[in-house]
Length: 51
Image (spheres, rainbow, N blue to C red):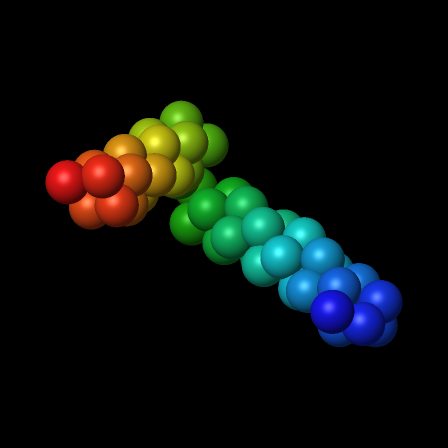
């Protein structure tokens, strides 16, 4: 993978995380809900992978 693609991928992931946190902040949702959603998604994807 070329360095430019890697850097673009890295920056896009960081921007997506920032946008997600900003949307949760604007909607006045607790960050604990975001953490729960992230952990739930990780668990579901993990179970699908191994199950």
